[in-house]
Length: 274
Image: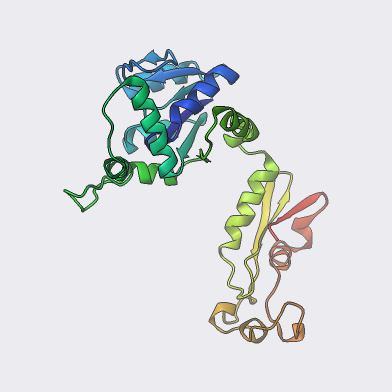
């Protein structure tokens, strides 16, 4: 497993990396020397060299906090063993961590306003001097993360306990089991629903092969429910009331009708997200 960690300033990116190193025997990787880095990472001259090393040793576990661009992230994303984690936290708490860190190092402090402005620049590429944001890379990368961790903890022990509950190293995060895989597909099918009451999708499977898909809404050939095709759903009545007026078919019905009895056969499984 190769985990990449991104996040806002003082959110705890290196804390998560350190926890993976200590508790799960991950090896830290970096693209730069860092005097305050106590993870003792292997240093690489480029992201290409780092990725080549990880690929050649893909059975081992690695973690890096050096993902500075969408281009680097895109190259990592192509590998089936890569997982992206985003870390964030309340801005006032992050500023408190920043102050504590600087006081220990006896360095000058930014004001809260300066800290927030630097945070906005980091996330949105925004500053008061240049109010038009350009290429908000951290914001974009965070929106594609596989797992988002909110670090709103004042004590490290509490944060570590929280990390232990997330099952970060569960390999199903990289490759879902069959049941999860088909339930994801059911959620996707539900997005095609046109029923005014609720979105439901289902997948009919036999021997791990998709036989049919279905979502709820009016039958083929009729006006869609969300376009006024079903009188019952569009009159705003409660579920179960005046059901004789409802023209919508259930997602399960649509999948079975599409498949037909011969294709359904024995030992088929129907996955539905309702």
